[in-house]
View 1 (cartoon, rainbow, N blue to C red):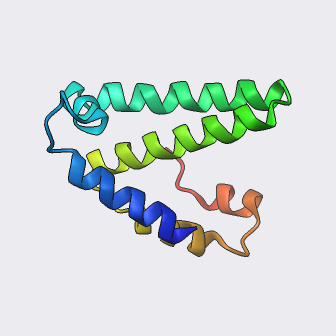
View 2 (view 1 turned 45 degrees about the horizontal axis):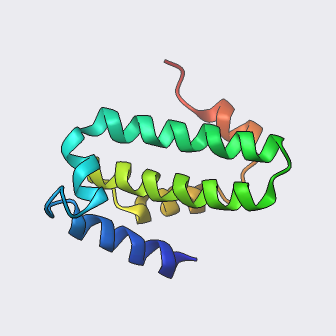
Length: 106
């Protein structure tokens, strides 16, 4: 899994500075972080809708779109995907309830 997502991450990072008329990644990047974040939200909602409709194929496709747009958002934030994976590794073996309780209160 890491290889596929790392390869996609590299492709996204390379295409961010391409010609927006020739690259969807460059086009979305040129529209700004708010638009990228909006796309992440849209794809998340579409994934949920497919899941609630018991649409397995739709959930697969929408999940792929969600991961793509999330990687684009992370690239825009200059956050390497490995940082997210490291955070998941850190949480491994920790109860979700305990992990949430340990978060700083804002």
